[in-house]
Image (cartoon, rainbow, N blue to C red; front, top):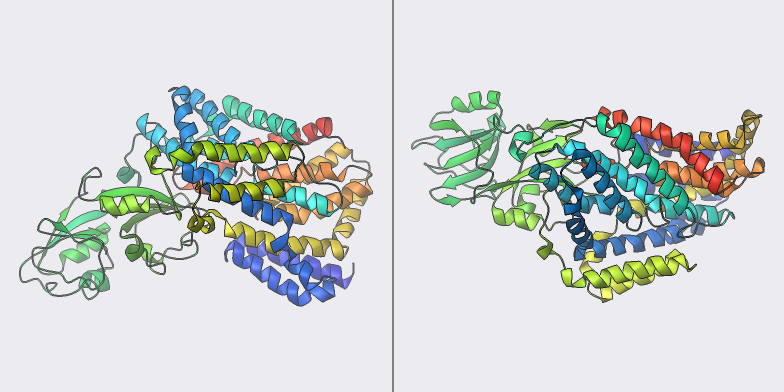
Length: 590
């Protein structure tokens, strides 16, 4: 092993540790990798243009264009319209609903980004669960898994497919066409669907069935009304100066003064005699409040359906600028004119010290505010609202145009035109046609993914240029001995499936594809088959809620625990690790 190889491996190991630890946002880790490689580039045999080439890589540009297309589809309500049309066909039986939903989400995810598809369908599934008194936990994991399984049917189903195709082409193995692996993808989807029909539906947990949003967040013991009596020491003091904030550390959600609600509140709001404060507090805090002179406490929970104030559950969505911040650092209350009364994070419901909780993708927030504020919040791209928005809020008149454009992108790409060309032309047409406004382009793009690609693509190039990938490939060939090609393919599939549970699926492709290609070449096998196996494994991550973004998105709303994903997904991962390489061997060839 040369010194250059050792440095390349050190960079790889450092990147993997940072990705897996989740201490820093993905895009920051990508920029850190980029910065180090700009310094070490000459030593690794890379020019500055090659190090920053990830920003201009065909895969990066194609994925950016596909995000814009998905944004246009979301703004016009195409998926909502399709879901509304298909919803009556789902019936009331649990297994029939599960199968119907997976077919719908899988079919849509084959042609649109699967993360965006889950974000749009999640409210519909939550609404369906509430209407039929069914636990959302019975439907949301199948929603996420179905989107992943559908994403491997065509080239544009997920960014991982596009990236794998680009990496294969860059290494001289040839890229993948729009429908080149569709037969294999359909078989993989069928295996996943059959798994849920026979086994998976029995392993799904049942939580929150028939509960209201307030009940599911265990709020009854945590909301109380405090009345300020005449002569109270709190009279004339601002919220920031009051003992409630300084000594008891409770969150005041609203102040009712006569017939008037003062929410949203600010720290300089001055308290008056007769004010009724709606506060969030635990039992210990209420005991402390009772020791303050001049107040009376009446525990109560506001009517969730009341016209004055309401509750709304939202999920922190992909690409949200809230990720990595706290309610305090993001100025949440003033920015959105509502208060967070509870947070569901990693399967736990949090009620205390919410202002200092670091927000992550998939965190479910229970918001309290005026109907107007909550309606405005439903239009915020930072959130996924878990109640279905009416179709009237979308640009319904643009649905035929949006459908025509996406069908054109798929159809022309299927005839051999590069997907980069069709996707970019299609994204421009959606804006010119009014499906997506110019100021909405930025919101539609997943910038964390774009920065991730820009950072990890040169890392893969460094592994290849220094000979590190070939060194690992030679070692794999020596260890393989008399192992059959199919078993070798299964090993690479399993390695990718495990790695993607801890780091990004796109990073998994960039890291393993050069090694897989070199190994296949050394063994006299088809490199594209090995890259295809890595692509399928990286695109279907089922064992943890952090392995794939669609899992993270349903984690909070479903009330899941971490091990729920392992219980349902580990066996499915094993089944696919045994069957997908066989499908590739039979229909692609080794």
